[in-house]
Amino acid sequence: MNSKLVIVDSRCNKEIFNRLSNFSDNILPFRTQGVTYESISCHPDIFIYQDKEHLIIAPNAPQPLFKELEKLNIAYQIGNAPIGELLHNSCFYNCIATDSHLFHRQGFTDNIILRFNQQKKFVALPQSYTRCSMFALDSEHFITSDEGINKTLQKNGFHSFSFSPEEIKIAVHRNGFLGGTCGRLDNKILFLGNPLAHPDGTRLCQFIEKNGLEVVSLSNGPLYDGGGLFFLS
Image 1 (cartoon, helix red, strand yellow):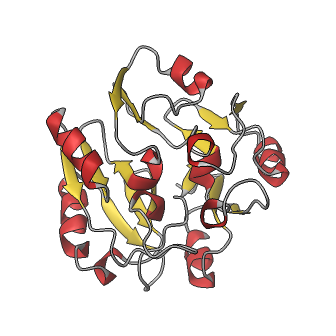
Image 2: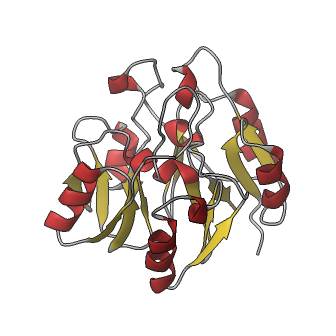
Image 3: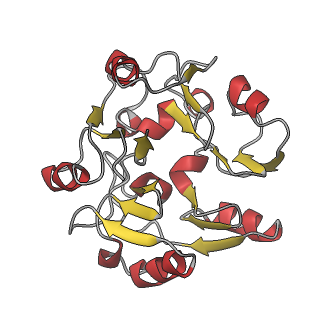
């Protein structure tokens, strides 16, 4: 079933937008200007936190996002912390929650997210850009391009696939992050680009498919870190 809305970096190429139309009734090209630094200025995962029950949006997210959510009657809550231009104030919403755990760097999480997840175990990670760097396949299995995260996950008894960030494209910088290249719709993991264009791609796809999920490539080119894909219904 298609989602009501998908939110995606406005800088993605036309092929990605064309293929996304097969999975969502509405596509919102996400962009900001003058809020945070250029490489992540169009990344939805900087401004949006999503889990199975909650959608929390930074108060200074772009107005077209709020208008689209209201038009489509998609419930959301506004977070406490505005996004800024520095490391310590651009990561408040860039975290991941499963049914049992919340993953983020200690001291970098918006208070509303912490309140909604207070019954879960907090797993402190060394990388504050958590959603950029990792993606949860389920409560026990994860993919990541950050070796520090990979080691922490395995130390805590999770199953983690470590993926090289080399050749992941991103605006401005040399390499992007794996979590920023993908999103989930039902049992599909959709990628901005083609994982098989990456040297680690075959093993990544095998790990995902072993966990009962389907890999979908939204273009034939290399993986692109666009701050993830957010499918909303």
